[in-house]
Amino acid sequence: MRTSVVVTVLNEAASLPALLDSLAAQTRPADEVVVCDGGSEDGTVALLTAETRFPLRLIRRPGANISQGRNAAIAAAQGEIIAVTDAGVRLDPRWLERITAPFADADVLAVAGFFLPDPQTVFEVAMGATVLPERREIVPARFLPSSRSVAFRKTVWEAVGGYPEWLDYCEDLIFDFRVLETVGRFHFAPEAIVHFRPRSSLRAFFVQYYRYARGDGKADLWRLRHAIRYLTYLLAGPLVGLAGALVNPWWWSLYLLALPGMFWPGWRRLAHQWDALTPAQRVQAAAWVPLIRITGDVAKMIGYPVGLWWRLKHRAGAL
Image (cartoon, rainbow, N blue to C red; front, side, top):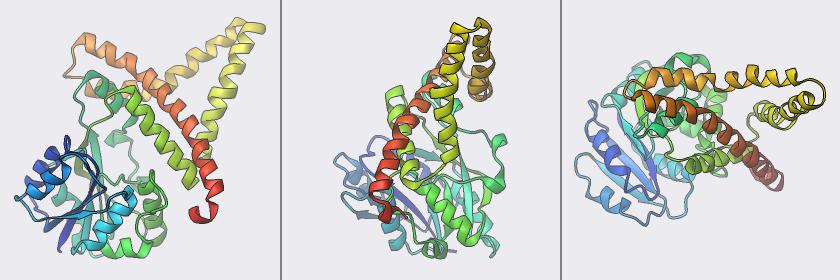
């Protein structure tokens, strides 16, 4: 089966060498790599045009969003199997081999790979532990893959109408839902691993999660999750504080019961990932977890209504 790897890029000169090196090191080489550039102004295009270790085709679509870029690259791809990843990642040497192997079964139409944090600082270790699930947490039948690590037959992409070009973030979730509705669940290949570097600062993380939540609002995703978040921060939290101040200070003990539950998943994952950290760095990383969690929640609460407002104004285009 001819396989095409598809990537979209925009000003990725700093991160691109790691991706290109990992593509060149694949145990199962791609028959072609199709890259869509959205209008890079750094050295991205020069790096791509200089690549000679594997067949690479560059498509330039200045101003295209990630969905438009992916669709353009997939439309140009000649492979029966499309394997999608992103700039800013490093592929395990056996990633392509493992994410395409299930297609030997003609009944397999789409495959979900997995991704692991690839931190370079103490903050990034804490970030990865706070926001990225571990393999043991995944329920394969319900897993919705990120387009950092996913593969499907090109006929599936055609059947679902491609990635939603009206959506700039959370586009891979809408694509996943369309696949589920059209051809059924993804085959889970947990050993098809992509190494993903978490955001390196709270500011960058805030912007990322603001955009994710704005995408949720545009796409009308996760209503209940967002409602629970607003109720927790804007209603339940203040009411407990008020009850402690006006009725009985024992009400404040509810904070001691609830807050560890919010942060425990991050601390638990961190304990599995901090072997390379010194004791002082472990304390530092553990202290980052609550701040990262709260920052992400605030970013989501700000971004979601912005997306909902967009949806109301563009309802015809979003449906």
